[in-house]
View 1: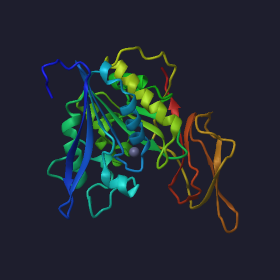
View 2 (view 1 turned 45 degrees about the vertical axis):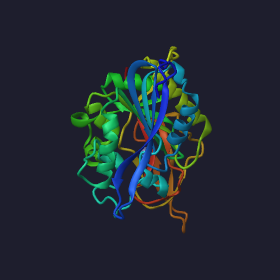
View 3 (view 1 turned 120 degrees about the horizontal axis):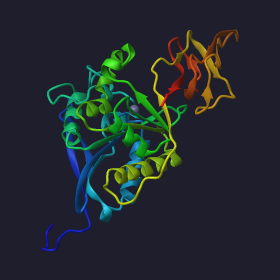
Amino acid sequence: MSHGIPETDGTHETNEITLARLPSGVALTTTTHTYRGAEEGPTLYVQAAQHGREINGTETLRRFHERLPLESLSGTVVAVPVANPLTFDRVSYTTPEQLDSVNANMNRIWPGDAGGSLHQRMAARLWEEISQADAVIDLHTGSPDMLPHTVYQEGDTRSRRLAEAFGIDLLLSEEADDDASDEWHRRGFAGKLRVAAANEGIPSITPELAHNKQIVEDVVDEGVDGLLDVCRYLGMLPGEIPERDLTVARNHLGQVTATTAGLFRPKPSLEVGQEITAGTPIGTVYDPTTYEPLHEAVADRNGILYALTQEATVVGGDQLASVALIREE
Ligand SMILES: [Zn+2]
């Protein structure tokens, strides 16, 4: 809308984009927000809720919308609050097989394929925006028993700087590709958005903001602060980011798992965030009918306990705890 007066305030616009077509012919759409600063600058892409029950990212983007000082912005922020409407509506992590029999988990198929399965098509449409970006933030949440943290690719300095700017205390570095474990490959982690973006040379991080299904106020605030600090770090907003003393740990995939089915009682004195040593008791899996203890679970290494399962009914192989190795600097 030009009236002959130069724009100095920056602009915000929303667009409804079509991610894919459902079997019924209904278009699967979502809304993107584009914030354009009056000055030139980098492009930051942020999305939330590709795992639809992980709604803290969506709430973070709503508050970011309220707090972003558009008049001070240089460059462009593209935000997608609901990247996956299918899982959002189901309050789920995955999409039913009827809609995507190739991969129920959208975060395993990036950068997508415009001629592929439903998730691949959705990702390919979003990738059109992502591939233009200078930095990518993919907002997720963990389980109720997981410490908020930010994941970046081991050895990728620019992604690490982005994670530091975001500022959630615990940083977890994850190895990728040739450096990664068999488990990493087996679980299809190469298809995560963060990994696909890093492979294209775009620094990218995955903040895990508290837990799913509930809005967790303080962590959402940290998420908004993190996005604004990333904008400052990228030179898109004025101001400096604070000096921070963040804990850096290596994400390890081999969690402590239940050896058998039963009820798991985590050791009440344990809290996520504490440092523990190999052999520390984590809790007990017992037979709920006879009360017989079946598995005394212990930590398998020294590190930071960053997840401890609170959902008590478990089967063999279920995750009981995650311990991240503290990185040698
Ligand atoms: Zn997720």
